[in-house]
Image (cartoon, rainbow, N blue to C red; front, side, top):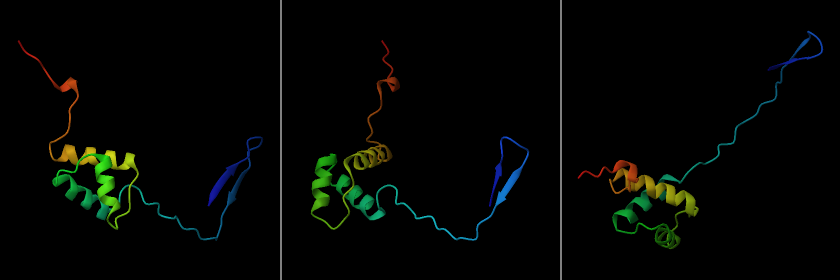
Length: 94
């Protein structure tokens, strides 16, 4: 149901539909199985996006695009304490 206000008058029209609709779920992000495999490869020392993609290509896991993979690897590095912090976090004392 929705209301439509006519801008040239004070009339309001109410519309109602009986038709059903469904929202197609769009898959966002990497599948959980792929995330798990990337974490395993990370723990084995395969940490560069191209190397991970090459390793995943020989498996049945769906291949992520490179940007998705880089973002996920950044998340894995930060969760394991291997992230690179910006120079704003460094303080040099004499």
